Image (cartoon, rainbow, N blue to C red):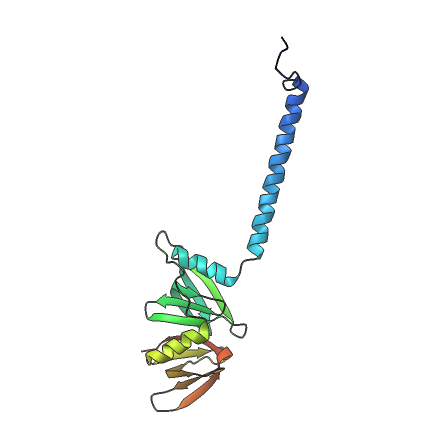
Length: 183
């Protein structure tokens, strides 16, 4: 009766070769994994990072138009960052015309929120604020002092009407943020 054992499988010269081949394979897989992670990192958008912060519940600080707002991310889209601060919701315009710096102020240990429904972007969020009819503070990308009043949203601009009835018209692209009215 013939022996069913493969004499080559246990050959002493092949044991080392097999181990070397497995080590090479592991090394190639690790390199491929590292390349995939690098490719993924380079493909991430600012919105992706903000949504991560929102899902974790991180506290985020946004510096825009000389003002710093810190709180939890409640909405993020391609052109909108909404932060819930102690004073209320602040909507930041994430367009190329508005310089913004963002910082994870504090990593959350628990909590976070799901993405929920998006308001449809910065202009749609301003339309929602207009409907609320409350006074707000509107900061611009080019003036150090913001405007206070009720907002009216046009197709490409925002009108801020102050308590005295004066109106200021701002190109939508120049509106840096809309926040609860300053005290």
